[in-house]
Image (tube, rainbow, N blue to C red; front, side):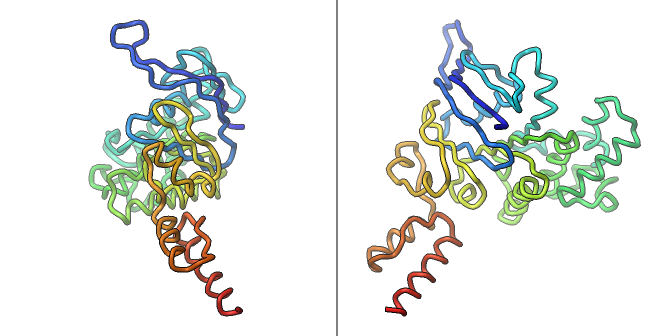
Length: 285
């Protein structure tokens, strides 16, 4: 298992008049080599939980380990080599005069040669779909919104993490940019074997992307399982302040007029396949 959480609770400003309980007694394991989505209503604790995965926050009680390394104050350097963290709107962290220098900045701090850092930065650019020859010497501020987002992601990938934690990676992008980023997430997972943990409020995006869904509700673990089980349970989703995927709503409405139509599709592709199979069954009859 890549991330193991045991009885984790977290309190902001503990032992002060302003203390606030954010997470309560969470226990779960995030599997290696898969995409796991963390979902829930605003204020459910999604981002707070994600920041524990590389030690930005430490549990008030309970434990967490990453690739069998306990996350403690003494192991933060090891853990952060393993876990790359991408916050919302990471392009706001771009700062250097060229895209290539910006991406190479972090890896240079590890003491490698400038030449090796540049080569690694170019590989990271290629990985996110940016041409080093075309974009490498441009100012990062001259890139489009989607390109800036990819450049910022490359700045994390250059560190070669085995786990990537992403907080709303497609937030604020137009539909094309959104699709590019989500396709990139899938590519990093499927082709590079990077374990991805993605914080999102979009049921539609995670229905298409995630292998596992973890739902938080007011800081507590509400549900954890496969999308087919989690995203078709209307009552459970509503309890957590979420809605069914549009594809599932469509199928449930159609089933009122088409007896026997399966209603457990949660993606557009799944809905289309179910309708084709239903039509074929009706034709055979």
